[in-house]
Image (cartoon, rainbow, N blue to C red; front, top):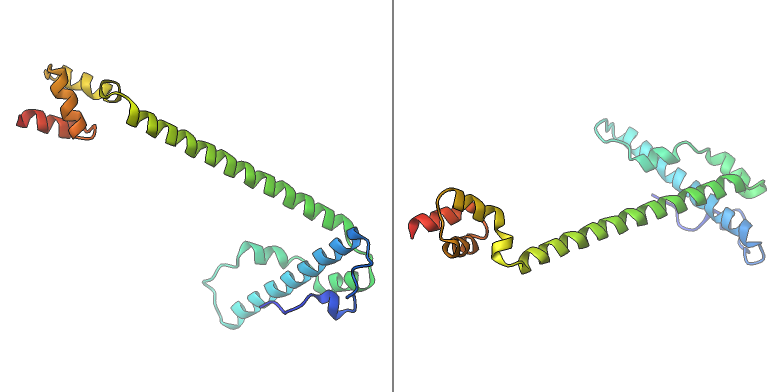
Length: 169
């Protein structure tokens, strides 16, 4: 849906090597925004032409529909460049990336903690690992602690299955 090649070349801004870095980055950002907006317009146009009333328009497409392509092309060709919008967009993206990285870090830390807990449970002695189940078995009258532990080990900690083993013995 997107055309090949940046608009910068189409409008004769092909020698960006001599441009100040800030101008070059802003022009590339504006060029990308124009292309994304045009692509979003094509998506909506295709949905309209197909009479598709079921498909929900993606949030990103809706986001780009707010921009005015002729105005952006004019800014790209003639200026002034929207440095304030570009800088705000770069800052928004930086914040989003930081938030995403933080969420990923927290999720990874939570996963590590769960793994530590799983390892701890696997390495705990059975009388600690199955403490609650052992108390329940003793309250039910099963007083042979060693038999109870063996039944719980065989049952993978399931009280119900351990009872079945004990009663079956």
